[in-house]
Image (cartoon, rainbow, N blue to C red; front, side, top):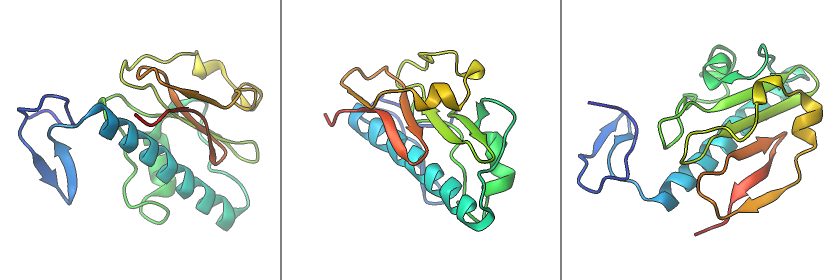
Length: 151
């Protein structure tokens, strides 16, 4: 059975280790879950930085899988690897510079070439709320800089 969630209301519900693994989910629920996952990983990264006085460093922009060995299970029980639309979350994190976390939204397509970005690009993003469900959801250094308006 494929993992993740679906917007198909006839889908079976499967709960594994207390987490919804497969079942129907609304667009509103998907957006809430994506923002909650971004916030949770941001909290884990911030907790790590409190303990060590620097952020975990990964090599460029990668999936959240790169952060698993550093953060699990001390700072977060389990790093969520896929957003509600079954697309890997993206992350950038560097020593003293900070970090950025991204969900590509419902369309699963990144809006920018994040692989070439550094802290200058992440910091230059103007805070933006959006009603477009396919827009990226971006969390930088403890704050959302692009997020969906409540539906």
